[in-house]
Image (tube, rainbow, N blue to C red; front, side):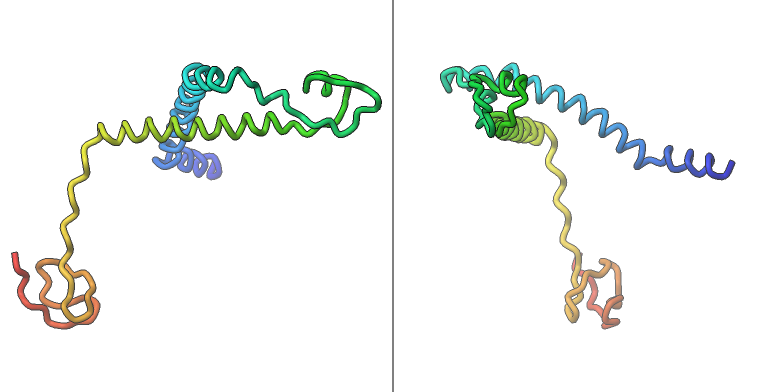
Length: 150
């Protein structure tokens, strides 16, 4: 029973639950970004590029006397290919997704309140290490400190 109790304590720790929520929300956010890219951003890019679909760009490595026009035909015939068009599509999708996430995060950051500035900590005049405002001695070099200016 000790093993089950240990596992339960591990699984119910705050960090594990936070991570699980993050994974679920991240998966849902991933679907939103994928939809944004595929349904909103890619169609205008496709129009701008003249309807070019890179996914059918390939280099056949062995034809064995067969002529193939599409990647699907080559795969159906069992011809090994270098599918560089799929690679180009993946790179293009990555760049678009990265840009879309950048724009979304940038807009979210504009909506979030700015964090309050952190006050500068008092430094020991001798060793330049931070000390508490009400300290009379430096905890690092043990020098006597002048009174704090408030």
